Amino acid sequence: MSINDTKEMIINVANRLFSRFGFHKTSMDEIAKIARKAKGSIYYHFASKEDLFREVIIKEMNNLKNQLTKIFTNPELSAYEKLNKYFIKRMEVLNNAANYHETLKADFFEHFHFVDDLRTDLDRWEKENIMKIINQGINSGEFVLDIKTDVVADIFLMVLKGLEIPFFLQNKYEEYSPHFEGLIQIFNKGVSK
Image 1 (spheres, rainbow, N blue to C red):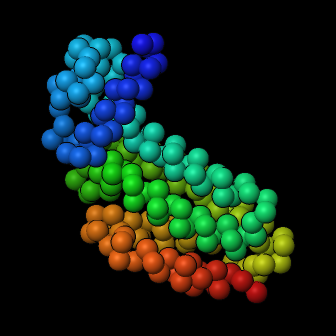
Image 2 (tube, rainbow, N blue to C red):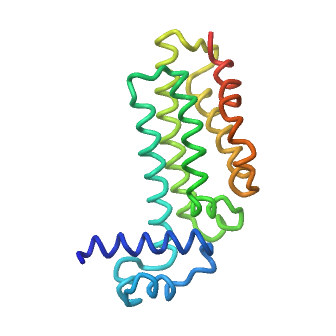
């Protein structure tokens, strides 16, 4: 097995264990045992459990970015359709990103500063792409705005992020996911002509 394959396998095993037991209850010994690797092999690739967890979170965020990129780069979708699909896909992917949920827990931020950096990077990336969708809507005549595009993108992101705690930590995703179409229509009506 190549070094890259070993590293990827360790990340996958860690992902499963962190998802199931949480960061604090998962040990490097358990990861090594399940991965069938010496503990030293894990430390060869990752300086600490926090470093390994960071890689797991990056993988989840990259999956989210890949899924959302398919939507905002689709030339066949109108801006309205893109915002709708963006909202639904984002919530769907994050619902399955159990380790991302760990980062939402308030006490977690006190211990790991890299989480803030990762979330800030994701926020910037999302804002940039939401602004592209909004600008597409303005250029096509779908959207009419009396406020700046970046303000609308910020508000859209605040709404999305505001839903994360109830959906993913309070387990209300299943209850409200059938109503996502209606929720996004409320937003889209606010920017539509």
